Amino acid sequence: MKECGMKLTDEFRAAWRAGVSLDGPLSRLVVETASRAAGCWRLAEDHLDLIGFGWASGMPGAVSQGFQDATRHLSLDQVGLGVVKAAISRKPAIGRRDAGATGLDGSASWIARFEANTSLAVPIEDSTTHCVVGVLAVSTAAYVEEGDSLWLTLIQMSQVLGQSS
Image (tube, rainbow, N blue to C red):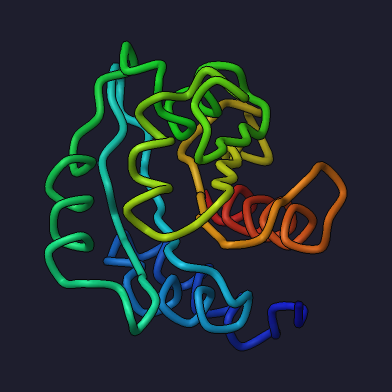
């Protein structure tokens, strides 16, 4: 997988700071990492709000729209979703198509619909307060493990966003 370029990093940083949609940068992240989908959520008091979603060109529109509708506003009690787990635990969360492998049954159903095998959700921590302010996630056909290039790319991108909070 290619490293994300400075231009993409700058686009993420600018959109995050401005509080605008991250659809464009997330769509480019999907292409650059050969992923199936990518999303970003901001943490509010007791929920996550979807602020951007990108998807692979071959993904059916109904799947993309269904995901966005289902995850636009996520309560933090939806612990079967990797993005919620990452926000609560303050650690990256890996989901698999087989929910039994990770206990993330909500993520597993979307991973299957995305025709992916792994989802990776990484908390975004404010670099000053060290509080979680959001979550960045991707779904990919690859089997991602801790330390893989996609893992490292998402950690790096979440740190950039945390510095922009």
